[in-house]
Image (cartoon, rainbow, N blue to C red; front, side, top):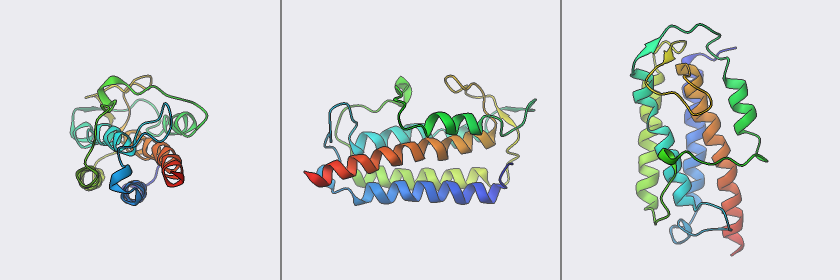
Length: 172
């Protein structure tokens, strides 16, 4: 069952607030430290989510089409895939963060702006419309509702990853 726009805004805000809080808890001196082999730094993770989530407003307000399926049809498959923490994914190049140092305060500030932008766009939009500006890898064109849920689910996956990074960094 689809959530109302205001419920979706609240869930998006809560998810992004949790991410921002965790990033804020990581000392600046460790923000760009590789915690273990094969892992991103907290800075790279923040950049990845900045790249992934910053496109939502343009996607939501871009060209749309009528949806010929249940507008929430892809939410469960997205959740099943992305919330399976045993599955390792390879980030598409266009949202893969560079291996470099990131400014913690700038990253957090940017994520706060993205959070506000997403909430503003979800507002009164008809979330049942299919977004035509971008086809997600593997998933294809999503409805606005599915795209908003993708932001929540994908961010939740990386919150899990960030908690692991935080644990390892706190042991050092």
